[in-house]
Each structure stands twice: as structure tokens, then as C-alpha cells.
Image (cartoon, rainbow, N blue to C red):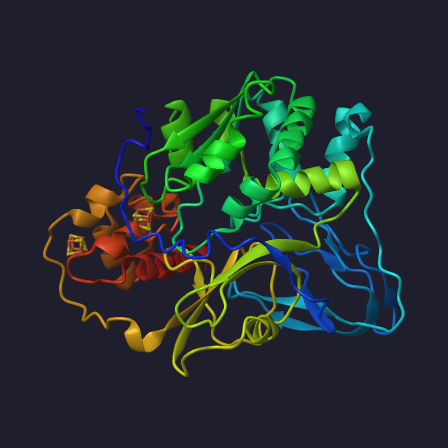
Length: 434
Ligand code: SF4
Ligand code: SF4
């Protein structure tokens, strides 16, 4: 088979998909959850509950504010114990709602509406908005806003992102194996909402042959193309996947709908099905718990707001006193400063590595080898941006198109001199934002 891939740049880190064959299971209901009101791109939601209020699982606790925002729902039933500041893995602080479980509460149950496909496109889109669904591949952009943009742009291609190129993460892979039919139903839903779609493609990297095999049988009757792609990081990034799967190119400063493509990742598709067919808001997700420093690797359904230390305990604890804990994978994830953080909608994995086994790399001066620019999939010159960021030169970082960098980390990974290029680029972006 002639496998496709994106055309410029990219690297090949070890994929470490050791958790891939672990069937998903459900995390036991936590006693408390601390749910952030800012866990999406755009304006934080406004908390509408106060201390002492009773809440039911799935009840709205924070309302979306403005066009680009997302609603937040209680992930367990209980009582609001406090409204407090929540440090979230994204590094930003946010107001949050601490919910404490109360005894003898009958939990909300979600049942299938067998005639969900007879809902109008508007009803479906409003269910997606009301459910607080955001892009669960990491971007956390409100999905209803993205879909509405695709209607306006008359998108003709629906591209389902099953690439999951980030090392260690296996939650989308498990969803493709365990929830295949729901993902196909979500395709029907999206095609009903965006009638201009003529072609649907599911892109899956070739290190997941079981997922490709599982998605193929339903593809013909659903008029869907399942595309196996050659391994190349960061193929899961929207623009790279569009290049690999459609050969269309998103120009700098433009977005996928501008070239007629709506990209939605696998976990988001499952959430869309749950919202439209089951009336279930986004209150939990499948998270991969992995790394060489966690005793039991798992793929777990975990309610949002669960404390990470509780998840660690449930997985048998840590195997080292000196760990590097990350929300997400090692290329694009965020290091966790402490385990008392709480899960959010964008957390697809928690990775625990034994820091004693991580080779300490000494940084050297740049030798102008150009390896970083050769792997940058958006054709930037990372060394120049990093240099300008280090010098605090706002004009220069802007001139070098720093905002087109989506922080894939490929340049840092390949750098001959071990310069932390992506960290310097983040500093440069902060300079501009300020
Ligand atoms: S400059 Fe940005 S987009 Fe380019 S390789 Fe580095 S992190 Fe990735
Ligand atoms: S890869 Fe590293 S050493 Fe080579 S040009 Fe880029 S920054 Fe310099």
C-alpha cells in the first residue's frame, strides 16, 4: 500500500504506545472534583452555582460567555463546597467549582434517543453547544463554533483525525476499537449539520493497524474513506493531516474551513454522538495513564475535575521518588508542577516518567546546521525565532511569523545543540501577547 504523509518536515520519535492494548475501564466515582471554568479556548465560562448548592451529575454549573466559549457541567452529583481558584495544567489559573459527593444521590442516567437522526441540523448543533464540547485533541476550541464556521465556509471535506501521533497517548486508539459505531454515527450527525460535505476521510497512522482494520468494515456503507498514513510526527496537527490526507494546503494566517476542510478528532466525535444521541454533556473523557514511573498503565474514563494524585493511587502509585509528570505527551504536553492538579477537557493522557532515567542534555551554542528548519512542518526558522525571543525583540519574532508555530516541539527534538527552541518560542509568544 502506498501510504501518504505530510510533505514537509517532521520527525520520528519513539512512539511508546505501551498502553495501546489495555482495554478501557471506568475510574471509581471521586469523592470530590474541582472543575475549572476556563478549560477551553476563548472566554472562561461564568460559574452560576454558589457554595452550598446541590448539583446533579451533568447539570450546568458554568455558562459559556460570548461566542467563543464553552459551557461546563458537574461531573459528579453532590454539593458545591466552595468556589475557588484552580491551577490548571495549561498554566493559567481559573475560577473553579469544588463539588463534594453527597450520600444516597441517584445519579443521572443517559439513555439513547433512537430517533436522534430525525432532529434538525439546528437542534443537533445546539445540543453540541449546550453539551460544552471542545476539541479534545488538545486545542479545546469550542466545537459548535468550529462547525458553524464550516457551514459558512461550505466545507466539502470532513476529515476525522485518528492520527494520535504524540508518543505514549492511546486513548483515541481505544475509542476507535471500542466505540467504532458511535464514531460513524457522529459522522452522520456532522454531515447532517454541514450539508456541503461531499467527502469524508478518517486519517489513522499506520502504527495502529487494528484501528484501521476496525474502522474499514463500516466505511463502504457510510461512504467514508479510511486512510492509513505513514508515521511522521506531528501528523496529528490539523494542517499536517490536511496536507497528508487531502493534499490541500492551509496558507499561513488561514484556517482549515478557509480551504473547505472540517477536521474533528476521534474523542470529540464520540462526545458529539453522546451529546446528540444520548443528551449527555461533556463531563468525562478517556485518559491514558502511562509511563515508566506508574505501576499500572491504564486507559480510564475519568470525570473532569478529578485530582491527579487520586488517579495515581488508583493506578497503584509511582515507581520512583523522582518523576516527571506530564499532562499530555512529551512533545506537546505540559509538565505538571504537582499532582494536586485536576483533569480538564483537553487532558488526553497523564504520563509519568522516571526522571532518574531521563538523560540530562547539555545545551551548546547553535552550529547553524539547519536541522531545526528542515523539520519544521510550517517552514519556520526556529533558531532565528528563538534567538530573537531570547533578545526580547518583539518586532523580529513577529517578522519571523512566530504565531504560526504551533509548538509541536519537532525543532527542539532534533536540535544538534540541544537548545530548548520551543520553550524560547513560547517566551517569544508571551512577549507579543503582553
Ligand atoms: S518552530 Fe514551532 S512549528 Fe516549527 S518545529 Fe518548532 S515547535 Fe514545531
Ligand atoms: S538545529 Fe539547533 S544547532 Fe542546528 S541550526 Fe537549529 S538551533 Fe542551531
